[in-house]
Image (cartoon, rainbow, N blue to C red; front, top):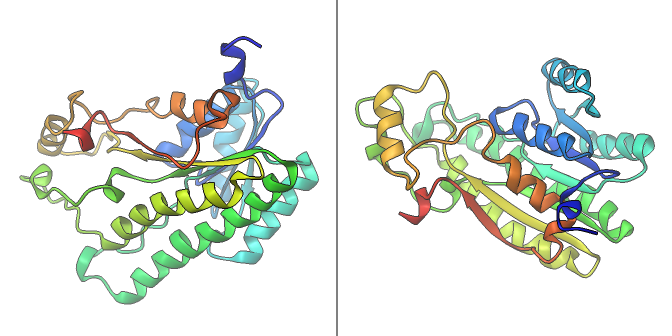
Length: 261
């Protein structure tokens, strides 16, 4: 097998949670273009179905399914449905995230608890459910999508001159925790041939970003820009594929050098 063949996902089955979001779209596209049968799952099925249809029109095997990460029965139902249809799961990308704390640090504690129910407890439940499947198979790759906000504290200077802020404690809390949870899962399942790694992306450029934020954030990076719609694709395929068979327990920033500066 040549080195480029090791990056192929042909014959593999992948699941991406939250597949219709900013990073989810390119994650799904990357896995499907590399050859995997790719499931995308979230609470709202309609946008997933539309996106999956667009991929299928290009000859890619992308399928949409509904689930609620905050409901263990829903998670187990998703697992059973995928196994019934495809018989295995080789790649799990934990990309779903709930953002209930709209008022930031001064929001109600109930919203913090709701965030933890989905983003912490729910992450544990789905990782265990599919990790056990992979362990029984003797192989698999779990990729957790973290954030640079789980590695560093908020920098208020990048928001100067805007109405934006970075004071969202739940997000910093669970994105920091996901990095060490990655190490735990890598250790727990490692002897069974299952790998677990974390990606920590930087900020994603959107059309509604005010110019001061774009300029100040870009100046904070080495590469002088925010992330775009393809920046995660290569690293996703690498970690999902046999090209990374000896890589586990890592956290990889994909942030243009933001956290290195």
